[in-house]
Length: 135
Image (cartoon, rainbow, N blue to C red; front, side, top):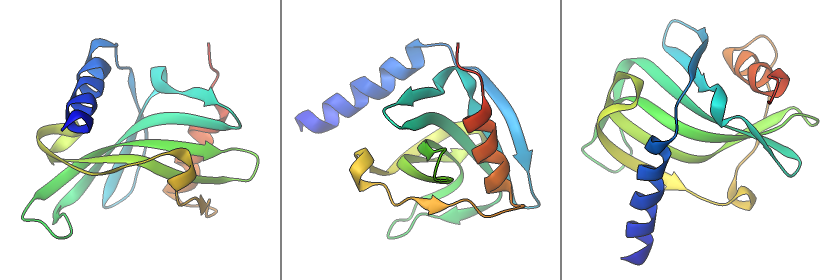
């Protein structure tokens, strides 16, 4: 119970900070935004919050929850050109609005990093975060 309470306190504290969402890229089935104020260096990684809006709703695996967007915390290994999600929260409305359902949240050591595929929206997303100037 304490973990759930701490998680919700953490999520509420995120809303206390200004968000500065910037459009990155879109494809036929999704568009990606990054909160540029969340981009930071954590050890050897870059970290950033993102919003993915999908053109078609989907059902979260093992649930009755339909989602059309998600907010995710990604970590980027800019030198090895790979990235992965640490946290994903699904939402019933675009832009991370409406009802939500958290699919997972973990430590950096739990992340399943994927190589960046050339000429994909994932590459644009990766390059946006890894080349963004941090103030």
